[in-house]
Structure formats: structure tokens, C-alpha cells
Length: 106
Image (cartoon, rainbow, N blue to C red; front, side, top):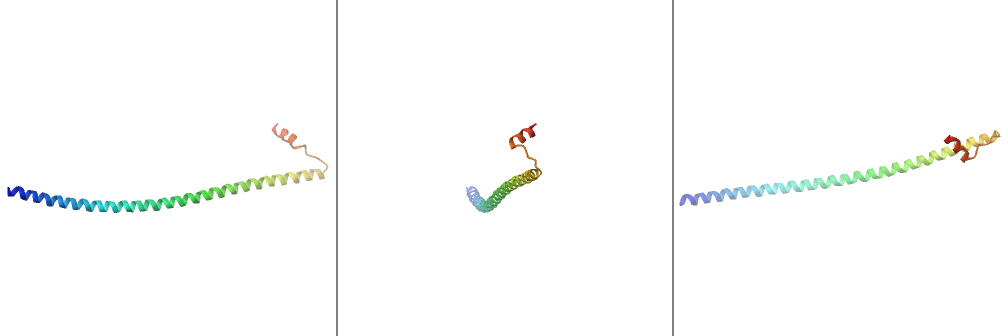
């Protein structure tokens, strides 16, 4: 009987030590989870900042492209007016725009 009492006491100490190790492991894991959560939050904020910068750059490039297209159209119109002006000075006339478009299609 004393042998079984000692065995129970030994099991109690063994279980107590195992429970303490488990608690220690749980606390370490909780710390790691907190650290990972913090790291993920920081990474999310960095990603959000990057996305905002990319959106800004896309908008800037869109505006720049629009400006370039408008500038190009203005330059084409100026060139056309200069050509028409020279032809008028030379006594020639360009056909109306719709006839020119038909000729270009052919």
C-alpha cells in the first residue's frame, strides 16, 4: 500500500511539472502570437501605404497621358492650320474635311 501511495505522489509531482511546462509553453506561444499579430499589422499598414502610392502614381500617369494626348491633338491642329495657311497663300485650297476623310479611306 505504501508503494502505491508513493506512486500516486510521484505521479502528482510528474503531472504538476508537466502542467507547469505546458503553462510555460502556452505563455511563450501567446507571446509569439502577439508578436506575429503586431508584425502582420505593420506589414498591412506598409501594404496600404504602398497601394495608396501606386494609386496616386496611376492617377498621375493617367493625367500625364491625357495632357500628352491633348498636346498632341493641339500640335496636329496647329500643323494643319500652318499647312492650310501656306496653301492659301499659294492660291490653293484643301478639299473640305469630309472629302479628305473619304480620300484617306480609299
